[in-house]
Length: 333
Image (tube, rainbow, N blue to C red):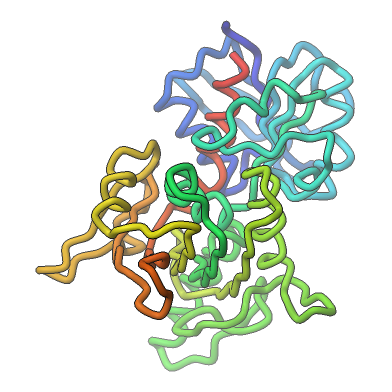
């Protein structure tokens, strides 16, 4: 089924990635509308050999639109997504605005594609660190229920947008030139530095990013019984998040079994070469659709072979955001 597609937030990092993926996957659109803030309205852009004029996002933007891909921030999504839905579009929203709304499906196509059919005009795209972490966990959970997840993230600055990526580049040049880096997007220098994720800290001491990972995983897996704890850290990497994950299973599980399951899992590439000490790196995942998984080993601190450690890398802008949203749109066709 061909359809009219609107992209809201087209000038941002995820918006630009939407365009690459729509082209690469030959998405069957009859036409496009490209929407952004007033700062970008009126600018020309070429897509698939056709020139478009970027329009200012407004309440009248969605007439005739079938699917609207949103990556314009939570406050914009909260206001415009219901308007787009009332106009007849199905919104796939990349912000956190609707993720925990019980009436809005939260979808990772490799995990719960069936949830798409329950939408009422809005479908939420999960948080990037959640998507990247749970795509490999899900097939293992299907084979042997996971009781507990301990995850530490190493998150690229791309999660804070295109300006954060520019800030890392600029600060790296400044530091190498002997200048003092000047943080603007982040509270602290991001070049040659690691710091706790730049989201609000709750009364329990966990930041918003960590809480998202817990709540979103429970919703997507439809299982609140899994014990989950997370620590989220920013690292000086342009794009692609890495995660260290410790899994406790209900029943004993062998490393070879885990490797075999992951080799067959959709959206996963196993990179686990112990002889050459070659495992997933941020650079491996840049521009790639799959989540790369390695360092697959038994957790000897847990009895009865019930623990497994994983290390993974995934492109935050791609599978962590734009690709997952386009895959959801494909499910709607």
